[in-house]
Image (tube, rainbow, N blue to C red):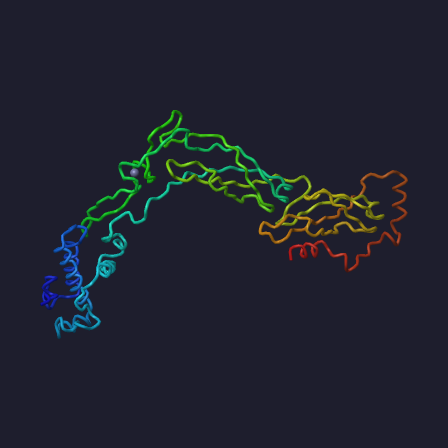
Length: 372
Ligand SMILES: [Zn+2]
C-alpha cells in the first residue's frame, strides 16, 4: 500500500502550490543523500518526497490523484512501481531551488571520473623582426630562448595529498546538506606528483632555466602583429606535465624602397626627362631579386606598371600579389643656357602641347582600378 502523497510531504489536502513547494524543499534538504551518506532509509524518503511533489505540483496530476488516488497512475504513463530515478529528481531541483544549484550536485557516482589532468608549463613570448625579403620568401629563424626545463637528476613521486589524482574533495555545507566539490590539489598544483629529488639549482618544481636555440619556420606572407606558435617550446612542467608553447610575435622592418599594401608592393620609380622622352630600360630591386622593366618612349609621369606575381605570396597560399611600379618623371630644376634656350624654343611647339588620350587615365582613376 502506497503512502499518501500529502502525508509524505506533511501538508493538508487543501495545501496551496506554494505550501507544497515549500514542504518538498524542506524534505529534500532533510533527506538529501549528500547529507545522509549510506542511509538507505533517508534515500527512500528522498525519493518518495520527490515522487509526491512530482504529482502534487502538477495541477492536472494532482486533480487525478485527488479523484482516484494512486490508481490514477498505475500501469499508465505515471510512475508505475518503479518510482523516480535520481536523475529525474535532480533535474527537478533547478525549478525548485533556482539555477544556483544546477549542476552543483555531485550525484552518486563518486568523484575522479575526469581522470588526472596533465599540468602544462607556461607559454613564452618573443618578438621576431623580419625584412620584407624574409616575409616574401619565408625564412627559418634561429632564436635563443631562455626556458624552464626539468633539471638533470630530478625525480618525482606520487603526491601523498591527492594520491596522484591531482584533485581533492571538499565538503561544504549548503541549504541542501553537504555538498562535495573537487578542487585542484594544493600540494601538487594538480599534477598528481610532487618533487622527490631536487637537484641543486632547481626551483621548487624541479625546473631550471636553460638557454636553448629554437628554430622557427616562418611561412611567406606573414604580417606585422601576427603570432606564430611553436608547440612545446615554452616553459617545461614538473613531473609528467607537458611544456607550454613559444608564441612568436611578428614585427617587420621597413623597406627602403618597397611599400607593402596587403600582398601588393609599391615602388616609386624616378626617371629623367630624357628617359621619359626617349624610352629606357630600368632594373628594380624586387623581393625575389632584380626585375628589369622596359619604358616605352613617351611614357607619362604617373603611369603605373603592374608586374604580376612579383609581390608577396599570400599567407593563405592563394598565389602572390603584384609589384606596382609608379613612374615619376624628374623635371630638371637647373638648366644650362643652351638647355634653357632649347626649352624656350619648344614652348609653343606642337609636340610639347599636352594631348592626353583616353588611355592615359587620371591618377584618381588609376587608384580606383588598383583597389577594385
Ligand atoms: Zn596532489
